[in-house]
Image 1 (tube, rainbow, N blue to C red):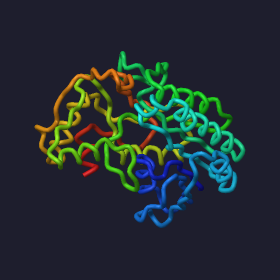
Image 2 (cartoon, one colour; image 1 turned 90 degrees about the horizontal axis):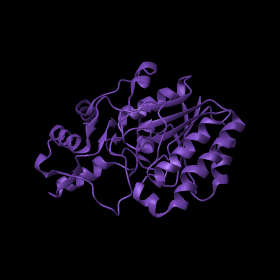
Image 3 (cartoon, rainbow, N blue to C red; image 1 turned 45 degrees about the vertical axis):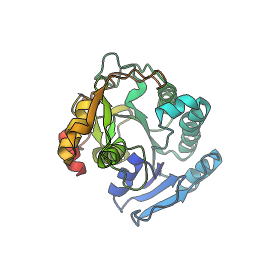
Length: 291
């Protein structure tokens, strides 16, 4: 089997690359240089972000059985400031990859987000209709629709808030930023009115690898077992990591300069638990696994 993983230096992709079997012919595309700690069986291809034909040509040359598309512009506030760039990265590139995937009949697994919903009801199931509140979410909803209309085996995975440390690159890890502040003795403000179902990055990587071998098609939620406020989540993390809990400070989001976000983006993971062998965890068990 051949697999291509986009966004190799990203947070979730790093988890996949560190866990994927050396029996799988694995290629990863990244805008960054090859990391020193890359597993020896992984083929690292550095690629330009603004030359979409490069991405397409590699797929046509490698002819993978599966593409796991993790690459994205994921900073919500930055997407709000640069909507055209966000659309180019999150939608246009996905369309280019889909077209190439169709040419080689590759299974396509797309990584989306829990923030495609408006956060009014929470514990969303796969059949709930997305109502995006910001530019980032709108780009992800459009990309989801493009993936689901493709004429190849395809999966849209909506990942809940992912907990963990970067394995191969910088990535978008709130836990790494949280650790840095605590080590500096700085307060860590966390919203007490924003609810998620956090999933640890190790479990997320395992689930995506399993989906590469699975016959499932459609939308699936990859989320933890526990709906929790980000403040209470951070308190549990600090306790499990042996950090100073007093530095975790609750606040209610009122920043008008911040892009709008759903208050309750929690996801129901019943479907994932019914079709995958991967074990899904709560916050405490997820952090213990990370440790």
